[in-house]
Image 1 (cartoon, rainbow, N blue to C red):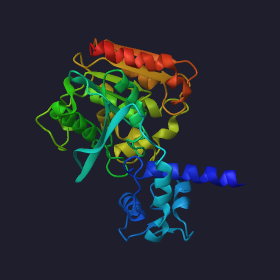
Image 2 (cartoon, one colour):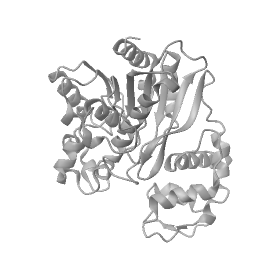
Image 3 (tube, rainbow, N blue to C red):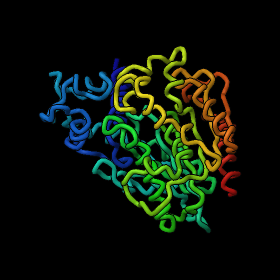
Image 4 (cartoon, helix red, strand yellow):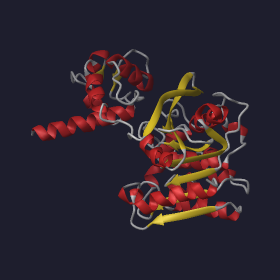
Length: 367
């Protein structure tokens, strides 16, 4: 029984770290700040409390937050909870062979600061290095930049500077807020290339699931002004030179009408939330706007696209359609469908898959 309770606590605290904007690794946050995050995301009627109907997160997480079990989240519920989370996060240290510059403000979105972690080798490279920027997944509605530290660490060991960024989630703003924030991060890195030892002409992006969608869109929409936003560094380009797209959605019309995936068409699905609500197929202009394929042309950077053949969340036809469009436009691109793999999982961590990504970036960026 004790082991079950410990497991439940770990799961709950993990969900908490995903739902709120995470602090720096190993740093505790007061419960009041956690409560402010929940209020900002979920307090629809602005009464300083959050009911079950208002809460924009899993029901299990609401129960975990609701420590006095009165079906309403108030400040009292969060006393001591942050300390538990802080104790857990003390174990989430960065790999020992890299440095992490934490919570660098790279711009603004929706009137607030946007932050990234920058990951560098212990010893500064002798010349400006290419940069690999990781965009997290989570259905555009959850996730954070923390896990990206380990995602980029392997690239840093191979001569890159790494960055892992946050972007506004759909509980805060619908599309195009997400791509605007991602593009702002690229512009910031280019504007501060000398400070961080970055070669501004060698910027690569990678991401999985929703992050895969966003990096694909970054790759195909370079120079599309209506997706740039006003977050900062407008004098810089947001174009990238290489893209690694791991099982990202592309064509929502095809996605939600694929047999077995029709549930994604409903109001309230992640795709619906990205478009601002309602059934997905009722918004053809929105579907076109978020689709990386819409913007494909011959000037797009090289792509490496990897997808699982048995993905239950995003059908493989999403990557196949993007690949076909890139090929038709004459863009250098590779599609690797991993037989039997699902939506992420151990198959994507195999050495040959990791080596494929490293080799792709080294070749494209002439490292």
